Image 1 (cartoon, one colour):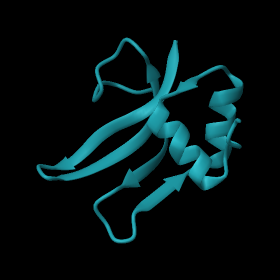
Image 2 (tube, rainbow, N blue to C red; image 1 turned 90 degrees about the vertical axis):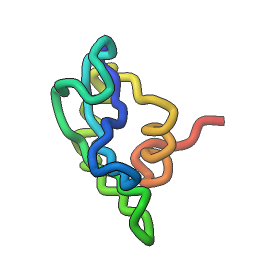
Image 3 (spheres, rainbow, N blue to C red; image 1 turned 45 degrees about the vertical axis):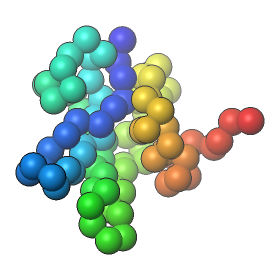
Length: 83
């Protein structure tokens, strides 16, 4: 199954995350299929860059986003919040 999740990059105590599509059985920082965007929680203000077309394409194919990625998608207006 393909998941949309964060993979950690950056230095010690300075995390930087890529939003990627990858096989759910792979390690967190393992090889990914496609990069959708990135998230930098350390910068002020926080940087969130997501390719909406790629994200919607992967969701249409049945990829399951993690809770954190779903929250980022909702925050960027890519997916509407469900009730």
